[in-house]
Structure formats: structure tokens, C-alpha cells
Length: 333
View 1 (cartoon, rainbow, N blue to C red):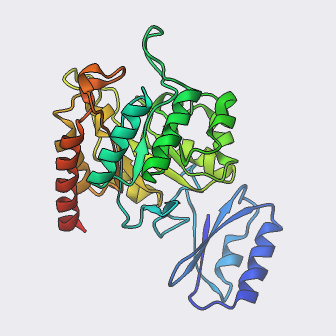
View 2: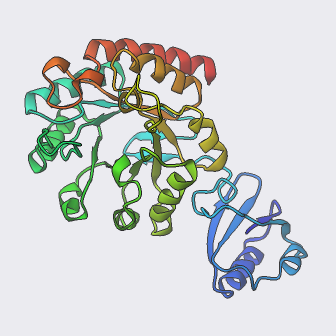
């Protein structure tokens, strides 16, 4: 249920209404827009007299919200969320390019790539220190050493770092990470999501391999309901019957999510396609489709990459793509 207040309502009367609603055992989600204030009611609203609330002089309208997700529902928060990572902004018209290798392999590798992607216009550096791998025999990341190498690359370039957390037990190692990524395989790890909700840190939440948009938003709800509203959603492809690409990139998810939620939505064409040749056209399509950013894998030597070299762009290819992305942005802005 949401209560929309009229424009110019005195703060005293607004506070009185909020106090009364909280007295009904409800939690309130307040969205102060330029022309109206939206009060989202979270909890059991069965005891609230809708007609009484609607009749109040300061109330413009009262609407029922049937969707199970509340905190991340655009009806509760009509204006776009802008997530800030240092000086970088994501959402609300702010577009972000996140780039870097699938996994951190050495100081030379990560620093070289970081310098290259920054020169091409990337605003954040991605890199895996802990890697979820299908096979137990594949390279699973440098772990704590990889995080330290990411910090070195950040010091060299000034780029905020984005890296994946797989296990709650490793959380103390991520204290100095700028954006924590929750990968597709952990999208419904609810204990982990609750822990993310207790942090004062942006969370990049990837859609699961076979999850619906509603399920993605319910996972975001776990984080936000625990207190952290700084969530960035990521469409990274879903498993279908197609065998031409690693996954099927659901670009229709971008405008659909923008209708459903106020959270920023970025796209990962690298994991979606698994093929470096397909990354640029899918990245451009995502940009034209209204994505708030891209997260792209870039490696200085893809042939010898320890993880996902086939989907990684070379630095010069990323630079060419970034230029085209900027041109698309000028057209759709």
C-alpha cells in the first residue's frame, strides 16, 4: 500500500500521519519527489482503514501494491535511484562502464588492464579474486592475494574496484572493496543477501541463470529490507535451449526492470554470450535499450587467460567499443 501526499503538505502534518501509521505496526518507506511525497507502507496493512486515510486533507491518493517486492518497487520510489561509488554515479541518467579481467592473475596483468580501460573511458575496474567455477579443477582465483592486487591497481589508476563475494566467511577481506558483486549462482543465497543488507556499501546483484525478473527483485528486496538501498541490478543472460551462445541475453529485461523498479540496471554481455565477437554488438544493443551501464571483461592476453579468455576483449577492442557506446549514448540520451 502506498499513500501519496499532496504537494506542499506542512511537515508537521506529514510527521503526524507518519507517526500514526508507524503506530499501526508498519514500517514506512519515504520517497520525497519534486512534486509529491510517496509513503510506502511495509507490513500487515489489513488493519489500516483505507477510506479514513484517503479522506485526510493532506492525502492525494491511496493505492494498493500487489507485488511482493516493496522496497525496490517503483511505485514506492517513482524517481530513479542514483547509486554513488566515490565520484562515480550509476542510474538516473548516469551511465557507467565497468571493465577488467574475469580473474586477477598477476600484478602486471591487472595493472596493465586497469590503465588501459581507464584510458578508454571506464569508470570502474572489475576483477575476480574468488571465482565460482563449474569444474573443481579449474583456476578458482588468487583469493586474498587477488584482492590485494586489485587494491594496487586502484591505487595506480584511481578506479573503484568491483569484485565478487561468494562466502560470508570471506566478508572481512572485502572491507576495502568499493562494490561487492553477488554473482548469478548466489542470487538466492538469502543468508548472504541479508549480510549485504547490513553493509554501507554498493551491491552489484546479478540475475540467476534461470531466474525470473520477479525473483531477481525479491533478492534485491532481501538486501534493501535489511537496510542497504544501494543496489545495482545486472542482467547477464539466462539459460535457454539455444546452444549458439553460453546464455541468452534477455535485453527486454532492461526496459521491463525500469518499469518495475527504481534501481539502476546494467548489462553483462561477456558472460551472456561467452564470445568476444558478440560482446560489442550486444553491448551497443544494451546501451540503446536503456541500460544504465555495462560490465565487460577485458584481458591484455586473452589467449593465455586463466579464466574465460574466449569472451574477453583486448584493450584496443574495448577502447573501440567504448567510443561507439558514447556515440549511442548521445543518440538515445
